Image 1: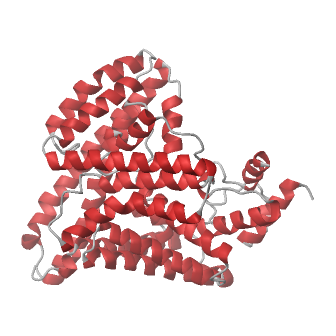
Image 2 (image 1 turned 180 degrees about the horizontal axis):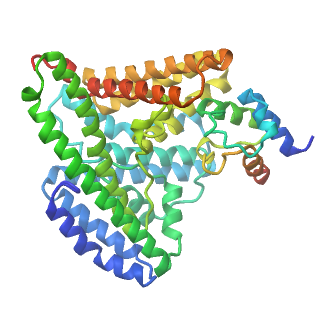
Image 3 (image 1 turned 90 degrees about the vertical axis):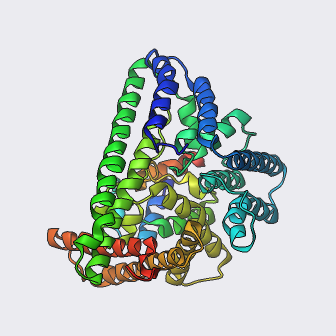
Length: 78
Length: 388
């Protein structure tokens, strides 16, 4: 599985909703799929699984809003 | 002089900012001039109280030395203990200014806007710890960020990295026209909100309640609605002034309100009400607390952890407003609402009990509005005053 898909399936796991896999351009915050708590869980998992440290305030909801965008941001950080 | 508090203040602003507007329309850089304006404006705002002026200067030296030393330290080392110490030292002047008057006659630490300036200082310490600020910050930029006069008294609370992006942006004359247009628009909305609607609610309803209400219950009920609306229009009006003047100066200060009374639940409300403050607490208190606890694995249950985070956040927010009972209870009330809503959301995710349609949406907004108003009623302190 490539990096982008791994990120998306991690997000689906955290949001407990497969709509994320079907529509990776959905705005996670607007759709109420992800909140502050979910974001922290996601960032902890990102560190554990990919070894990437993303500071909380780096996670700007205007940019890190859809599964595709989040995957892109993380890919940039790698 | 209170910022945005009198006609004179606005008159002085027009004169001080005229060169900014001329430079902006010609597409020239104006931040150096704006820094000069900030010094003059601060002088005018704090001229009436020598004590406050001295406190502001002392506070600024304290924060700037702390931030600079911590950045210097962080380049080489990164101990937890030093970080905690830096956070405590950054909050210390605010804590002292709030607490000492209860125990002693010391009242010379505080000044107008100390809480908002503290939020900016603590934020810089935390972002340095996170490695988001690596290089030494130029002293003029740091000072300008902390002391930026349009937002000095009550925010909105900006973020350093966002603020300097605006400072570095090249604004052409054409682009500046939009800044100016939006800025003036916001300033006039401020007049409408604060000095027409807010003022009218206070003058025609709140101060005349004893003639309007026929029973104590009616009195409290009308007061609750009127005070909630007044609080919004007064503070949203102030924020519109602060943001509008920032725009005229080429800085897009973050928004503070986004139609809070149409929130469909309490979580939604905190994304719409005093946003720069609630986002500060979200990013620097709640999320950090959850992150820390998740890493340490001290609390395994997700719901317990999330609820503890809410209690911590809202209790702190309450205490920040003041140590009076009404503020602490206000904080606990909102913590309770968040915990209850969290439980409802979980339940609903499983059982799909609350359908999504126009009617339920309207009902949610209606219910949320009443929960919010009751919160402001607690906040107002009316509940604790004897006799009406």
